[in-house]
Every structure is written in C-alpha cells, then in structure tokens.
Image 1: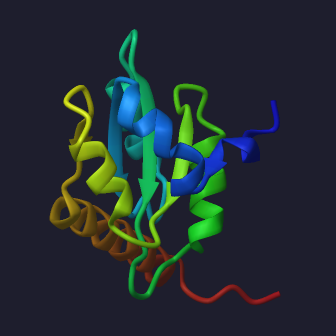
Image 2: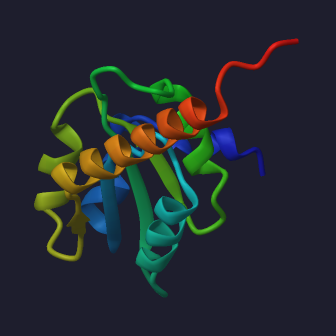
Length: 130
C-alpha cells in the first residue's frame, strides 16, 4: 500500500469517524522523533483504528505534508488527517467509542527541547569548513 493513501480529509473520514472505534492522537509531531513514534504505537489497540491528526504550528520545522507522510508510514497508523478545522473533533465527540489523546503543551515542550539539543550540538561542533 502506498502510505500516502492513508492521508485523508475530514470528508473522507466522516462516516467512519461517526461509526467505528477510533483512538485519535492529535498533535504537532514536529519533528517526528523515535519517542513520538513509540508513543503513537502504544496507542494502537486491537479492535480500534488509529487516526493521527497533524496540527499546524507556528515556526514549524517540517511542513504539515511532510509530517503527515511520516506518520502515514507508521504501520500502526490507519489514517492521517491534516487539521484544517475543528470538524474532526466535532465528529469524534459524537462517537461514544472514539478516544482523543492530545497534550499540545507537553508536545511543544518536547519540540523546544529537541530544537535546543540540535542547537547545542551545532554550537559544540562549531562551523564545518569544507
């Protein structure tokens, strides 16, 4: 399967979001780290579908499309949605079997820690002369 086929719109997912058992992990995933991928994999549960909602972020490191493609490549992910409106949440809240997991503040902290780590390593190594 071409993993890009997992990247869907709200309209594509409308009926299944209302009907099926979903775990929905909403976040920035910027960048997608091994830790992020492991956290997502832990959310996959038998009998439930896993939807990743990619949220826009100011000063993003990776584009929304790139983050969506990376998440779609994870085997445990059934669908990826790039958030363009809160409509996905409205649909999920109407489905009693849907679970939404998000912690934007913690995710922003992790992104900032990652950025600091990269900057510290670049400073420690110094400029590369070719």
